[in-house]
Image (cartoon, rainbow, N blue to C red; front, side, top):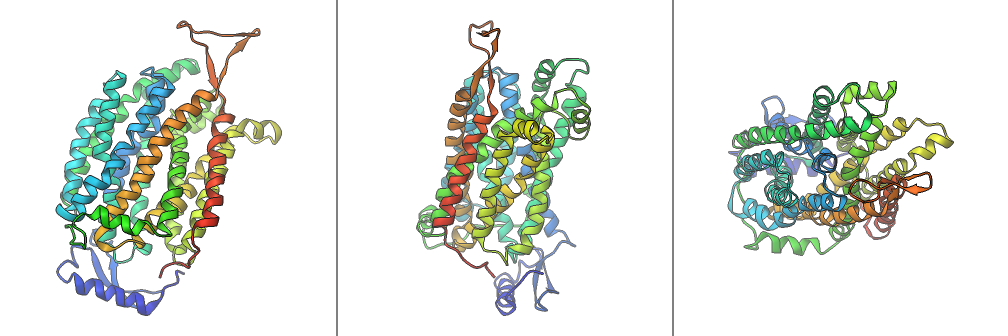
Length: 490
């Protein structure tokens, strides 16, 4: 059972109702008795809809993103014919919105504009952009559209967190239950797109190369699905509870936020989050094509897995989100008992272990006899600990360590690190590492050359995944040394 400090908790709950006497129903709170402590206070009300309203918001928020992001590398490489370096720049564009988010969306939501209205307008505008991304074939055209979409969509990630925190009486208890529906949304569209590709874009008797090419063409539909979901989300956001801007000591919320980030634990967390998000980028850029190559190999095991998860790698990656649900389910039970540092350390260990399994999948099969797909599924499953114990807990730390009037800006600032700076730098570095890890195809002692005169190469997955593995271990050491150890918050 979760440990609470009854007197302080009851006082805090009473203060919430006293401060928002006319907003109690809108906040979805009911006065209940906590069976763990015997105290009475407001609780996020699931029976009349507030909990479910926030959960549906999270479901749509991440379904929009999950429809196409895991498939982007395969789509651009195998259908559009872009090079690894060009694709790296496409992923870099994804960080642009997060970099400018704290200056734009955070300022607007914290000072000028209701959060739910900003979300509604952003998602409808983003739906228009992502629909056209499916048909853009030129490098500069796609890059431009990707930047525009990033400027629109990226800030909404942190703002849905901020809106949820605003309407929750207790983040430790409530946020995990709400946020896990974002993971459910990612899983639903991932498997759905995988099945769509399997039944509509997978020739039955073609070889692996032909299957991969046909599936890549069908990935255009992933962008169109994202657009449809974006329109639904935009309209739905206008029905969400009012989340007005707050008055603060500083006219500009960003300046006030920077003052609070300069001290530990936020300083260490923000600095380590940069390389961690780069490691995260390796996962999302290369895992789908890495898994897809195994899925397109003939065999009863691969066929059975494809029947459930579809093809293309994106569906199989949803196993990681399923594990994420389990971790998010457990977070409310351990958040009040374990220190934030302990949870963050577990997440970093999972990052290193996942990259080790990916890099050594063939060695484990040859030396230990573990089937490759078993190793890959285990590695993908570690995403639950990676996300839940580091990314999710990190957002909780940011909310805990910042003042009420700058929480949306602080969330966007951390989003800048996770989905901005880390993505930009990680995408560029990933492109370099991908080029470095290419081995020439040798036949008869001669390196093969394609019709364009360029050498034919294959990716050395051992080299590629070893780089983020060692980076995760370095982050783990830094976390153990510099992050202050504290008891869990009450």
